[in-house]
Image 1 (cartoon, rainbow, N blue to C red):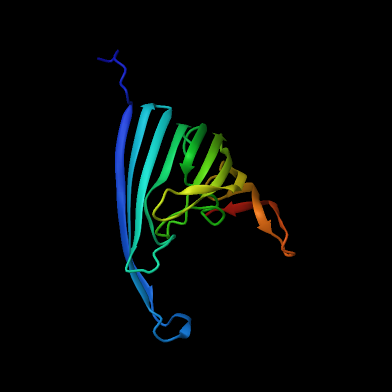
Image 2 (cartoon, rainbow, N blue to C red; image 1 turned 135 degrees about the horizontal axis):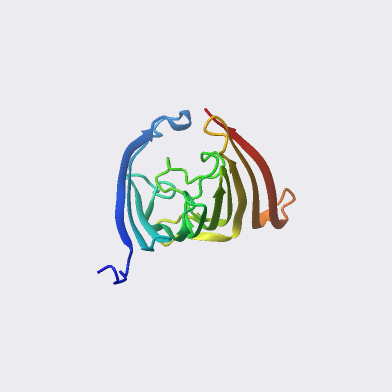
Length: 213
């Protein structure tokens, strides 16, 4: 009856498959430079909602480049975890949302940060992302490290290559005008400068994106 608690509030399974043929001839304007191959990508996902405010999501991906040598990322990344995160609230809809784990980050219509969906093996981040939105205003805060794709083994982020940021939005003016200020901070160790000295990269940038109909 209604008084019995269920183990899972909701469970949703899904997936998609994509394939395309591509290639070229006359690479670098040289004879006998032809490369043709078939790209194949399968994604399977599972969403578990123990309560209405908590969601757990995992998505596996198998991306292959048939008849391509060598078959390496971003063309091929066989059987790996593409996304795996827990989310409280909703970073896409609710007033408050917090998402922790491997996930996609997409800002500025992917002109600034994105998962690059045109690639066969797309990009994800190991990240913590929090979102607040209220009466036409929104703010995203995230701390992340990009996942390094390696075919044939489990992917992992580069521990010393981090990207943090704040991405805002003023939507209250309607679709005719949306203002999105942002600030990004990148930290990376072990970078050689112009003099060949290994040092730390500490780069900050800010800007604003203005879009509308």
